Structures are given as C-alpha cells and as structure tokens.
Image 1 (cartoon, rainbow, N blue to C red):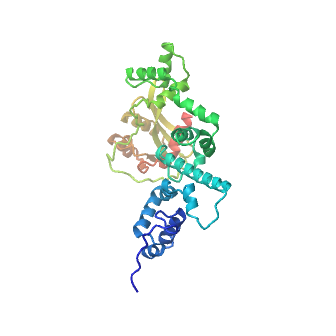
Image 2: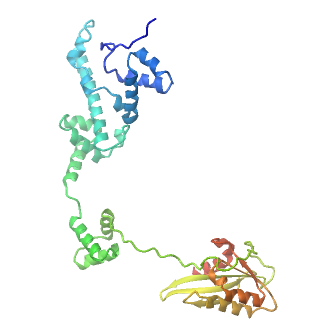
Image 3: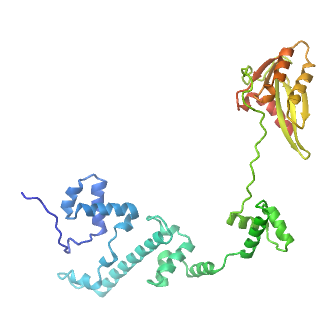
Length: 366
C-alpha cells in the first residue's frame, strides 16, 4: 500500500481556505483531545503547517485570527454558480443571505478596529465599551458603512454619537488656569500645595474652587515632594550587653514597688516637641515619678529614676524598659546597680513587651 499524499486541489468540497468550523474542529482534535497532528492532517487533506498556523493565529487573536479572508466571502454570482444542480434561489433568500454576510463582515471589521485602534484584547465584549470608544470606532468605519448600520450594531444612540463627537472637538477645560497653576508651582520651587496655590490664584484675581485646583494639579502631575521625617527613636544599636525580659508581658504585681515600667514619650505641642519620661508601678498603674525636657538626653531618664528611688522603703523592684540608648548608657546602669534594682528589657522592636507603660502615655495624650 502506497503512502497517502495530501490533496492539493481546491474544489467546492475542499477549498483553499476552509471554514471556521473545520478549523475549530481540527484544533480541538489536535490540541485538546490529543490526536496526532499528522493523522488528522492526512484525514482532512490539509498540511500540518496549516494546522500549526491556525493554532498560532487562534492563540494570538482568538476567533478573529482564524476567520477567512474577506475576499473569500461568496458573492451572489459565485453562490449561484456553485449550485448548478439546485433550483435557483429566490430573491428573498438571496437578500437574507447577503444581509447575513454583510452583518458578519461588519462585525469582523468592528472587532478589528477594537483591537487596532482601541488596543483591546481580541475577545473583548462590545457591550462593555464606553460611548466614547464606540464613537471612535464609528468614526473610523464611517467611510465603508452607513451611520445607521454602525449605530445599530454598536447599540449607540445617534444623539450620544454626536455628543461624543462634539466633546472630542472641544478644547480642554481650564487651559488658562492650568498654565497659571503650572507657572505658580514652578516659580515657587515646587513647594506650593493646592491650598497655597488657591490663595495665590485668588490674590491674582482668579477664583476657582479648591477641587478644580486639585484636579488640575493631579492631571498635570504637580506634586510637592518633601523629605520624609522619621519618627523619633531612642534605639542607637547594641551599645551595651542586653538583659533578659523578666516580665514576659506579665504586668500584674502582688504589692507596690514590685515591678516598675519606664519609657519616653514624645509630645508635639505648639511650642515645639517635648519629651516625657515616666516610671509606672504595675501594682496600681501609679506614676511613681516623671520628668519633662525639650531634649531626650541621659539627664531626662536619670533624674526620673533618682526621684523614683526616693519613694522606696527597702524595696528592690524590677525595672523594665525598652532597648533605647537611655537605658543602656553607663549612667543608668550604674544607678540601677547602686540602688539594687533588677533590670529587664523588651525584645528589639517589640512594643507589646512594654505595652502597659506605653498605654499610660497613649491615654495621657488622648
């Protein structure tokens, strides 16, 4: 038995460009059902190169990629010549068929313009297009199709189309205001926000709302870039040996002066920033001592500790703090050793380990 060869003759039953149904069925058999491409190629009499070309086009553009060329759509004369054995179709039948072909061609052209002009995905649904996008497609295809056809196919009202056309032809709003705002922004070293720009516009006799100023600045990318101010942190590294966390978040005490907590909190007031150092007793939440200063130096915490120790009567409490540098300097360590206090420290960057003292500062700020 000789080797089977492909049929390369183009006939009515074997056209050069097969229908989309044949292409889809072939792609389903080869790439979904897993049939051998060579076997399917011999069965349908189309080369394997053609099948691989179909799958590449389908993956790239979807159904639109494997549609036949527009020149392959049968005309009225071809339709009659290809069916000599059948009775001549009626005029109504021909009109219906030609209308269906015309609708199909119109839909294909709309899909092409959606991909090429609007840069949409190949499988986009025309129903989700905005009126402005539909108007763009109509303007592109108006040379080949009548306006009623396009409006009907895209489900767009005639008044909406002309409104979108007019909106496209109008010059952008606030052109002069935009130039003025840009000038003010640049002349002031890009440091003016929308409030100061609005004040400057009012001084120059231009009165527009705050929302419009913000809209123009956002549209033109005018944004004040300022250096990010870091929050105060007393952590300066491991400047002395660490001590263990003896409390382990157990902030309950059976008697006064058994467990003390200490911390520094920053307050921003109209006169500037001030720093509060407190020592809290876990027994009843009493602030045993405190000290306020404009600079968070060693004297701030040392003075607080000296005042707290004066209230003791032979007690030797555990004093718990975070890992800030104030509680790791030699002066603080020497004082705790002199007074017989046991040091305890939170884990690095773990504020819940000292949450009872931080909660006191938070409530005080509120």
